[in-house]
Length: 306
Image 1 (tube, rainbow, N blue to C red):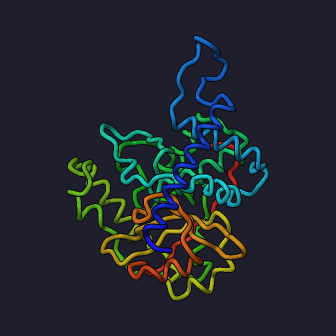
Image 2: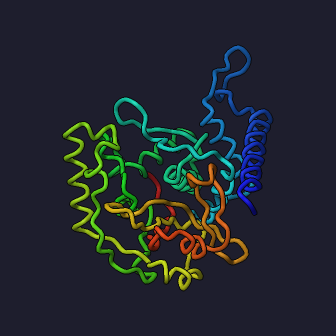
Image 3: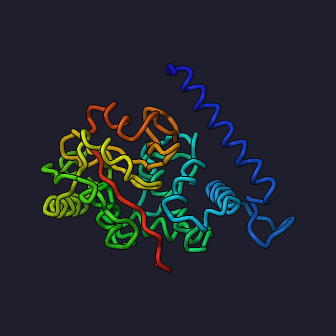
């Protein structure tokens, strides 16, 4: 399929998705504050409208009864065609929870499929619970405490969410090798991050990087990804290790098994929208020379809370 045809197909998916969301909102009353009618109606944000629509679809498919990984794979498909928007978390002002289901980058796509699945499994599919879970997953220890508290590096995100019982890092168990790379991209490129003009924040990020380098991380090398395809499960969260100096991972997405083949569902800058990569995960990794392997975090069914 050439690039023109692919672009047209992505545009068609985006149009159909938005039309479906609008139709579902009209049919279900999404867009109205619960318990209000007529002149008392108050507007609901577009993000909450999308949330309610996706949750209604998940209920119809009985995703609440599925393991969290299977629910993630199904929810990920619901976002096919959603536009790619870069730097979605970089809003002005003090660090705060950013909610954006209208446009996704690779990180927010991964986080949102995970959080929506957790809400279902917790039997708490409300917008308030969604915001609570998003904060819990996105920030160190589940608490917003300035820009450095956001989990900027993927392997640090995995480490913190493993401690919180959200995921399990299965990279080593699936044949991963310890990486010898040092992570320092943010502290060595402070001009690329508006918030790092704050010397206190820059110092805190350096401390995060030092802790990461002391801890280290594992990567399944690209040459061995094909060997572990049978062991990849729906909803497994993948980070692609990279040749970029100072970085641990350059891209993220989730595994969706189709016809027994684990494929990569993600929000790539080059694609312009959430889409499914052609072929298997191994095919995707081998087609990108700057990707040196994968880090694998397996989502865990949530305990009551947090």
